[in-house]
Length: 268
Image (cartoon, rainbow, N blue to C red):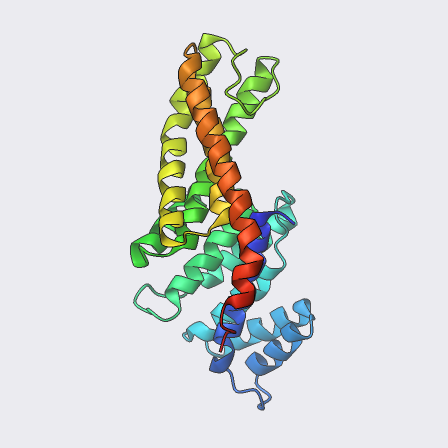
C-alpha cells in the first residue's frame, strides 16, 4: 500500500472512531445498525443502513457522514473503473453535506474528501481541499505534507511523460540528456508546483521536526527541481546535493523513531 493510500485508510478509520459517540449503541435505528455492520466489515449492509438513516432524517449531518465514510472506505486507490469513480463521487457528495459552520466535523469531512480525491487522482480538487484545511488549521503538519506530495505527484507525472515522449527514462538526477526544448517545457509546467512542494514540505518539518516522510519527499522534490537546470550543470548538482542531504536526514529520522516511540508516554 502506498503512503498516500495509507493516509486515506487511516483518515477514514480515525474519523469513523471520532464520530462513533454520536450514535447510541444500544438502539435498533438504521444508524446504529449501520455502525454495527461497518465495524463487522459488512460494508454493503452498512451502506444500505446509512442510506435508510439519511432518508429518515435527511437534515441531520450524522447519517451523511457515516454514509460518506462507508462509501469512501471502499474506494480503491488508483482504480480508474467507472464503478470506483462512482463510489468516490457518492462519498464526496455525502461528505459535502457538512456545512463549513460546523467547526467540529467540517475539518474532518474535508480530510476525508481530500483522501477520496487523491485516490481517484483528482489532484486539482485534492489540492484545493488541502488549501481549505490549511486555512482552517495553519499548523497542521499533515496537511502541509499532503499538499507538498500532491504538487510533487503532479510534477513527477508530467516530467516522466514528457521525457518518455522524447525517448528518455527519468534518471532522477535532473536528466541532463534532455533537449533544451524539453527542459523548457518541463520547467514551465513544473516550476510552480515544485517550488510550492518544497515550501510546504519544509513547513511540515518545521511543525514536526522528525517528519521522515516529508524529508523523503523533499529529496524527491529537489530531484525534480534539478530538471530546471537545463544547460547549467552546477545548478543541477546543487539540487542533487540538497536531495541527498534530505534523503540522509530521512534515514536518520526513521532510525531515531523507534527509540523515541519507546520513551514517549503512552497515549491516554
